[in-house]
Length: 365
Image 1 (cartoon, rainbow, N blue to C red):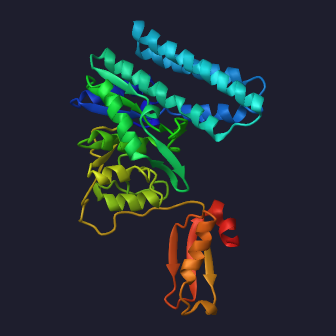
Image 2: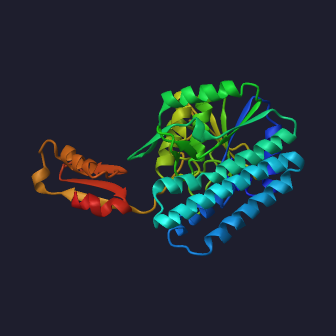
Image 3: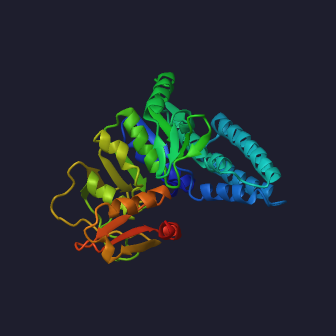
């Protein structure tokens, strides 16, 4: 469930009603409540230079979280979650104070601070489900998911992750429902990190793989995968079914409803993925599996913003072997990610697309 699906107490109650319709065993992966991650990152970014208002913003965030807890829970269940929340806020205050003293917010600090929202969501939802009589275990993904960060993003260390998850699962074997944090993970050294913005979908696919899930449903605020971005194409329609390959192409080329890295763990184990609308659960959504729908050749159109086109051309390139290799070797040496390649049949020119932020580096390379 994404952040908009958990935006307030009423939405969290709605999520529990959706889960009531599912038979255990069940695993639920949650994002932070809508807006919480941005507020946490804002604290980390202001910490090096802020003098007075940091505590005020942190306490406002704490008060908002306390209001959610007391709205949904009572008695010892509420008291237990509130004690943990207060301890987290105290830890955050210490981290932000240290950041202010250092005068800089290193990436490790930002990653640590950003992940608290998922912990709060998981604990609240876990407690709400326990209050409904379910046996629930809350999994802090930093205890089990091990990732390394490479040029193209986070890479899961599957061997270490499977080993840690097997131990965690053995310790919580009696749970009918697992509520796991999305977005967050740890490095091989145990340092808290994240899977990047919108990484909770990726987390869900990782947990689906670890558990050998029968299926994965991603609940979001759209009806499924659309044939085009409705902001640009008002009459875009929902796709009933697409293949893994089609979904990957659309994800990498700008279809924001799917996180590009979500699909890989599911593809490996042939786990079907369904994208559904939390706000309209009666709608079927889009199913992503091996074959998709063969009724139409073209499934959709996608767009990527902030892209630069570069062109390498000259008569001296015609018939000369190795030009493309030399070009892309030069770009690789500078860590430039190439999105699209086109070469004229005359071999006179090669055109390629790169992220706008890397355009100058690519041209110089």
